[in-house]
Image 1 (cartoon, rainbow, N blue to C red):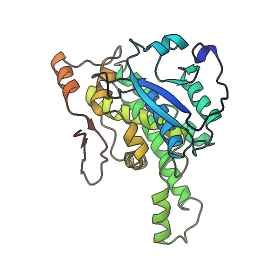
Image 2 (image 1 turned 90 degrees about the horizontal axis):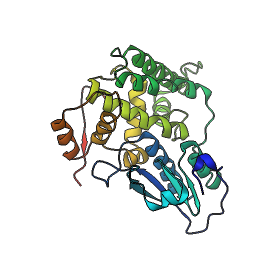
Image 3 (image 1 turned 90 degrees about the vertical axis):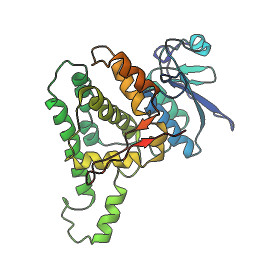
Image 4 (image 1 turned 180 degrees about the vertical axis):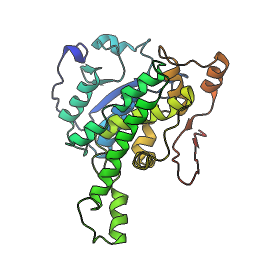
Length: 289
């Protein structure tokens, strides 16, 4: 079989013990999960579907420069990759299509053109900025403000503020706010699985390599990240800060760390920036395992 670019995803008939295998980027130690927003996206989708008892899966960390034998057998070259029986795929869109075709459900589908539009630009602006093409972060700021406006407006519309429902009492309003957490509603969708890993890369790498801080007054933005940081699916699949920093350090045209600092970061205990700017309090989670 070839890679996904050479074949179309096809429908299988899963058995009771059917299992799919996902291959994701390995970290600097060769074992823990490395930083790849596309790998995390696939991992999140698999975990959501698994929690709904739709499939069983395992994740294997892989160095794409030294792929396992099964990659060569199926013509795979990249991560993320998915192997299911005799089928192998390494193009992201086809991996997602294959999972949705063979294991439909999980609440991931969405139809929200405004959300698509609001999330369209920020990652390209981040890549442009961090690759030192432009030292001016103004276009990145604009893209984040665009996303923030959508998130704040979405919350207001849901709470009945914009649509004129001014009779909602405080208890109902608080309950409504508590449930509106993500881009398209109160559960993670495919769009969240795509956007949240990219936002985490932006947040961590831009600070470490360019000393860029996301504005603290973007209330909708930070509320959205807080929802992610309290969701087990995102927390379980998120790479540590060190992996994100080294991922972008190793890419062409990005700012470089000194050899000494690179070595120190690679050996540090994993840390995760899951803090939000609330009353200037900061919480950083350290993995003690």
